[in-house]
Length: 115
Image (cartoon, rainbow, N blue to C red; front, side):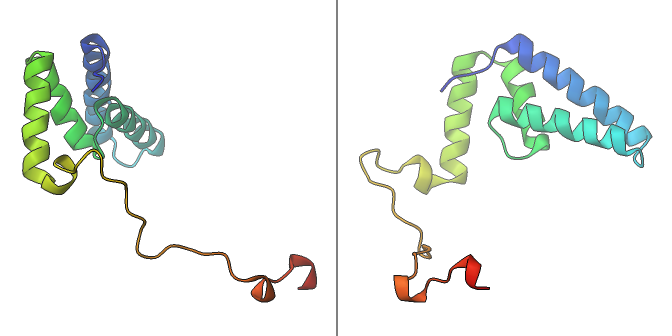
């Protein structure tokens, strides 16, 4: 797993925290809210999380520990939260979703010009 540079994580975390304070002071300002959400999204992408709060927590943990310890913690968290995906056999082929869209037969297709 590739990890971001600690300096960049620290910079983005400071940016997120600063905009969080501004947003809490002026919650109705749309520009402030948009910038805060953008900083949260950047942190999510950087830390590989789906939620800005989780990304901020992960960034703080990452900055407190060394890379090896952080990766070990992530592995333990992964095993606790999603045992099926973490322990999935690497040689196993992905299974298609249950509801897969299939193209209708030619007789059932309609031309957009015929509407």
